[in-house]
Length: 208
Image 1 (tube, helix red, strand yellow):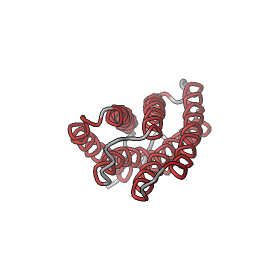
Image 2 (tube, rainbow, N blue to C red):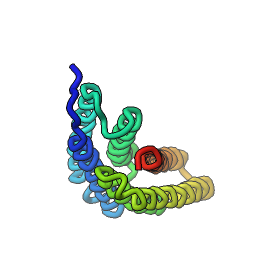
Image 3 (cartoon, helix red, strand yellow):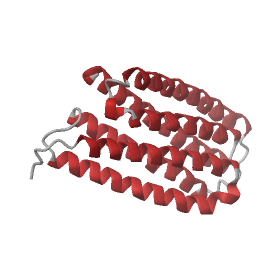
Image 4 (spheres, rainbow, N blue to C red):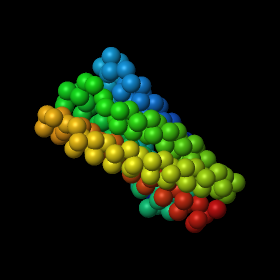
């Protein structure tokens, strides 16, 4: 059944909640790779945040399916909701892989990628929280998206250097495999954040 009443506030509220969850999860991942004694406790927290994010995404998609009027293009609403959900899944998945692969001593590359990720996700949070007044906030949103792109490029450089270091220094093939997989997982996380930035820039161009 279609909902003919405008429901803009619920979209923005849910996007903001997911943005906040992403930033919190990224900070927890950064904390974890710098102090692996907190892994078990932080994994439980990350799982809770990831599950809450799934529920937020479900609410967003239910609203999208039932509403005739949306705050901006339906495809953009869907893509933004999906990318935000994927980011949370991948943050949890990064920590989970460290357990599965027995990666108990994070490399410098992992620590640096986690730091960049926390910085990127902080900007994702700020940008999605500004969507409720996109016209008034267009310059700040675009600025944040540029910073997201810049940080993603920095993450790419860290990733490439990390892979090269593995080829040069990894003596155990299993070490090479486990860390390469984790590096690639984290690099994809940064790509997802850049995807969010691209959607947000598109929204600004269309509606600001």
